[in-house]
Length: 120
Image (cartoon, rainbow, N blue to C red; front, side, top):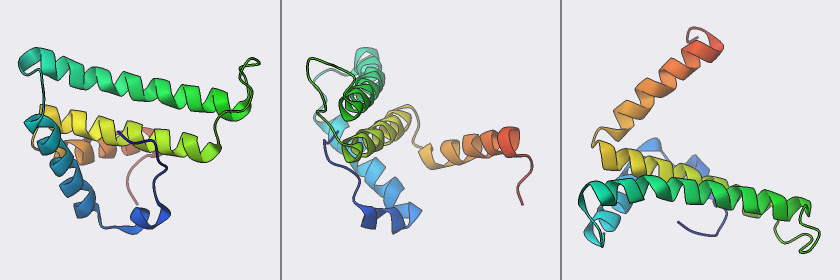
């Protein structure tokens, strides 16, 4: 997606803006998709693995764990890469269903219940 950290001011935007942006990104990607069908769907899912790899690269770079390269990233870089993972995952979910918001909310509710118990 992008190589920039999530701007702090966007965290306060309403959830509707998040879902509208996910829809807009999905539309943009779907319009310019060079490979469609099942293969295009699989490639969209694989993009998520690429983004997760970029998180790992940024963490290794932020901690200087590669002695040949040293410190090459910041923790802000890691934040940006994590944002890319979330965005890519939501776009991938949107690729599977137009009911992205409802599917996500339902699943988040199940995870909350399983992890934290019943809602307050």
